[in-house]
Amino acid sequence: MEQIRQYVDTNRQKFLDELFELLRIPSISARPGHNKDMIAAAEYIRGKLLEAGADKAEVMKTDGHDVIFAEKTVDKAAPTVLVYGHYDVQPVEPLDLWESPPFKPEVRDDKIYARGADDDKGQMFMHIKAFELMNRLGTLPCNVKFMIEGEEEIGSPSLKKFCASHKDLLKADVILISDTTMIAQDIPSITVGLRGLAYMEVEVTGPDRDLHSGLYGGAVMNPVNALAKMIASLTDTNNRITIPGFYDDVLEVSDEERNEMAKTPFDIEEWKEAIGIDREVGETGFSTTERTGIRPSLDVNGIWGGYTGEGAKTVLPAKACAKISMRLVPNQNSEKISELFARHIDSVVPEGVTVKVKSLHGGEGYISPINTIAYQAASKACEATFGKKPVPVRSGGSIPIVADFEEVLGIKSILLGFGLESDAIHSPNENYPLFNFYKGIETIPVFYKFFTEMSKG
Ligand code: BES
Ligand code: MN
Ligand code: MN
Image 1 (cartoon, protein in one colour):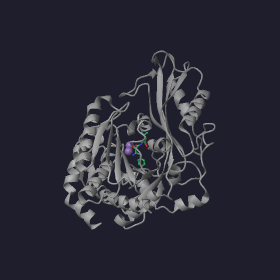
Image 2 (tube, helix red, strand yellow):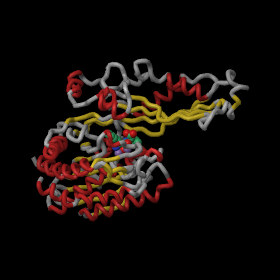
Image 3 (cartoon, helix red, strand yellow):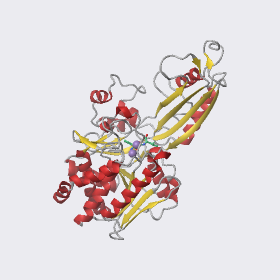
Image 4 (cartoon, protein in one colour):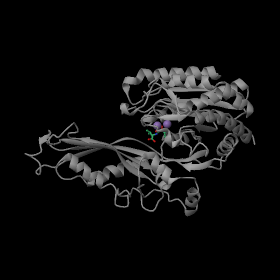
């Protein structure tokens, strides 16, 4: 422990400078205009993995953005940890709300501000530095592989196939991921559940052009009005989703487990204050953490159509669209839910408009068991570095590829995240506290140590 702390202390500035270099590369996977930045980021990471002590590190082609793969073998008989992370980031709009430019990282109030500071460049980079630390100190106890992808933020469209065609290369005993949150800086936690996702787009078409709303209003079905009605039909007054069959496969969580979950520290007042709301709202009969952790949800992510410029324009629009996502819980199947959604929308289309429903992407939820060596090792590692046993939490977020890892590679993942909910991932002013960055680098080598020891029995 002392040795680890010392190495982190001596290298604080170097670690930060190197992360900043990565944060300066605008690797936005969703924007084709940033393709050369994607390549630059991948190349940078490959170099850092080699420097850190990998036997080999390469940038590998997929059907989409490249994957960086690296490995180091210390002992064929020792276990192998496969680290997964992503180097792509979300778009940065609205730009005017950023206090400092998203790709000019800076430290303010002991936090790193930049797009990707937490999700996931900051968290992923901790693993490269922890790997370097173990190599320099000569304490790397097991074999390590890295798989860092560039398409997580667009739904990992190429990674499942990549995994299926590189099963041998990716063989490992556990997949280690830091791409989630912990409850607070003094409450370490291990994520034991992720939600799935079904992401839909609905397009409503009416007249063949925008019409004068005075000459035609009242006699033509307005696509925006129609879309609003259809969206309103998706939930009821108890905030339950009304799509027929939607809840059929939801696993009800036992009272015993709900009671256990209710003991997890959570301050509703602080939570509301942090996001500027005065009343929490959700499915009747469930608490806030249950609503995000064990229940599915449905949200309109964006809606457009008609005149949205300054002032008033009297127009009856020709078209309206919405992007709608559903967060799913384990055992719900995203393809089935997408179909149920489309069927429901078809059944409520008002007369006078036509509707197209498209599924943009989807993925399954994940439950990470706590009776595994990886969980015990992660728990002991947090206990060693935070001085407190971590709590298991079910997160509302999604990392769909984690379920695919289990399906395709047959490997379970351990979600050892160091982000905070206040890190504003995907939002303006994304940040990552220095404390979490360095604590992560400290904790990871301890995980390796316990995991290796416990694997050997
Ligand atoms: N790292 C996040 C997911 C996350 C964050 C899980 C915090 C748990 C706690 C990941 O990069 C992400 O943003 N995932 C997307 C899904 C993807 C298909 C676009 C999400 O959850 O919206
Ligand atoms: Mn992420
Ligand atoms: Mn993300």
